[in-house]
Length: 91
Image (cartoon, rainbow, N blue to C red; front, side, top):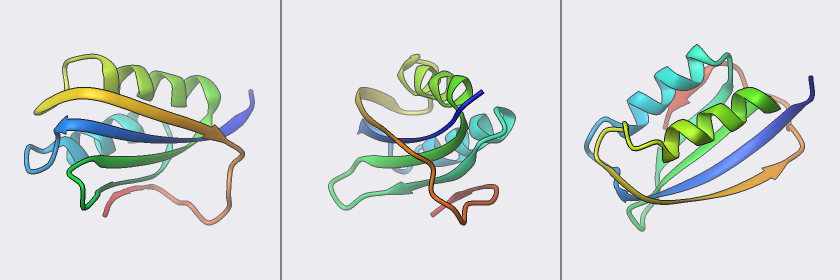
């Protein structure tokens, strides 16, 4: 099983609706490390590291329609893991 880094930018009504908390809970259930933070342009940036299958599952959940608020689009970037991540936090 290969570890990867997923960076996803989520656009829609995703700030102030519990979206980062929900994302953190799903990521922890999947055993991922990383963070979710609000960006100045109204999106939420999600960085998750761990098994590729778990990151893909998180991406599917972000796009799945059962999130808090409203997701209009998700853009993702896949890359190699970087060190220093423990747990999953809201920033």
